[in-house]
Structures are given as structure tokens and as C-alpha cells.
Image (tube, rainbow, N blue to C red; front, side):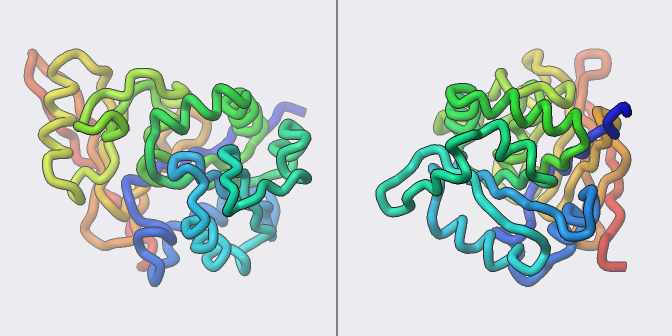
Length: 242
């Protein structure tokens, strides 16, 4: 049997960490899983496995499925559960949804590659898993993107490349994001997608199926070059609340 293509839900902002009283985006992610009560794994690598972030995830997802987490930094205040990481390939293969938190995208990518998690997530996606995430958890799936991992807003350059092109989260939510992304595209970065806070790009395989949102009147954008000028194409979002 040929596996069904996996999903990627790339969120510019929103979800349980930014909108704890608004469940729409998180409910949408869960609705894409292969089973009614999915196994949902939170990966907080970009926040250096923040215990506070992990606690917020469990409060949000304990009632939505079989919630678990995958930590790789092993801070003393948060002892790693050996049963989750002793055999990483088996653990990853058992999950239906991977929800990647925000933080430092460059550190996330370096840590995943050190542990081989990048390859395991790619295999899980090809086997039909849902890959979702906010901010760093949006950027990591693309080839390139605009990140503050290095201090200033700069190109990421070495994303996982599951989705071709570049990406920019928080397009309307943080000062200077839009201008910096346009500058990056103008200087030769691949064309890509920008998402406002509360907006998610939903891909099946590598194909963009739709744009969804937890807020009305929001959008994502296709950003590229035309005759040397940066141009935007607005991609209206389907509001999940109505």
C-alpha cells in the first residue's frame, strides 16, 4: 500500500501558546490526524525544552488525544523520560501529529540534525503524519526563511526543505518583519509564503491546499519578484470560526 501524503500546517502565529482561549487552529491540526484520538507529540527544541511551554501544551492537548513530548536538551529541571527517547525511531513512528513550538530555529535545526530527528520526521511525514508548528515550527519545514535566530532578522538558508521556497511568520505581528522579508527576497532568497498571526498554511504533501485562520479578515501572502520588484499576492484565509 502506498502511504497517504502527510500534512504540514505552518502557522505564522496563534495556537495554544499565543491564543490560549482560541482553540481553532489547534482543533484544525488535530482534525487532520489518521485516527480519532491521535497521538500528539510536542517538540519544544526551539525553546530549549522550556518546562513552562511543555506544561502549556499538556493543558491544551491532554483532552484532544494521547499527548506526549520529545525533549532533546535534557535540562536538570526537566529529566528526560527514557521511554520516549531511548529508541527514537520507534517513538517517532508511533506518533500521528508532531507540534513544533517557537523559539530559535537555527538551534532547532542543529539539534535535530545531531540526533537524526530531521530524517525521522521526514519519514513520518512521507508515511502520512501531520507536521505542525508556530514561528520556528513554521520556518523549519521550508528551504529558507526570515529568522531572528541570529539576533537581527536574517535569512535562515538551511531549512529542511520539505516545502520549496522560503517563509516568514508573524508577518503582521512584529515590527519590521514585512520589510525585512521583502528585502530578503529582493536580495535573491527564493520566493515564498508569509503568514499573519493566527494564520496557517495547510499543505498536503508539497501542495498548498488552503489557508486557514483563527481570526476573521486575515491572510497569508505569496511573495516573490517580478521584473526586479518584490510583489505580494494575497491569499485570503478561511476563518475556522464560521
